[in-house]
Amino acid sequence: MITEYDKFPKAIEQFDILNSSEIHIGVLHDKHLQMIAIVNNDGATIRAKNVPYLMVPTLGKDGKRGFVRLKEVHIPHRRFMEKTKMHNERRWLSYAQQETMKILAGDMTAMHALHYLGNLATEQMKTEIIKFANPANAPLTIANKGFNDPLIDTGALRDSITYRIVPKTM
Image (cartoon, rainbow, N blue to C red; front, side, top):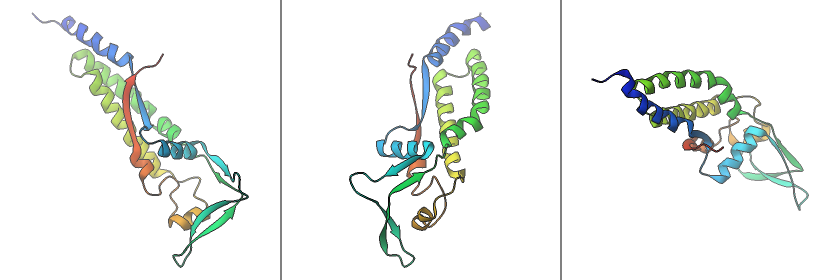
């Protein structure tokens, strides 16, 4: 005869997997895009080194390329990573509670729950990047891009957001 208690050993096994795992979300596979994500999230001031000016490419109204000489460029912080967490953390906790009950009942595995949450958080971060509006791009950036979308240029940053499940570090 099978009882509810027969599911506990398997549930404990699944909780051990949950407790020993963490989900990393962000730009995980491209060092150049990681730098772009960090600079956009945290902000930065870029100054000319070993030369008097930065040479910033421009696109004129006539479609001709040129350059503007600047001593420095200030990129304001656009905290899309923190906003993703702030806007979604309660939802993640609610989901985790629901999935805990499914694991106890034997209806879900820990890895399934972790992958679902990783996919969910990845899509939410991509949505945060798409929605982001303030601070706006600088006039020079708007002129070069042809539009004002602070975290979107080619879409490469947004498209590079992914997740991975890794062993928890102590």
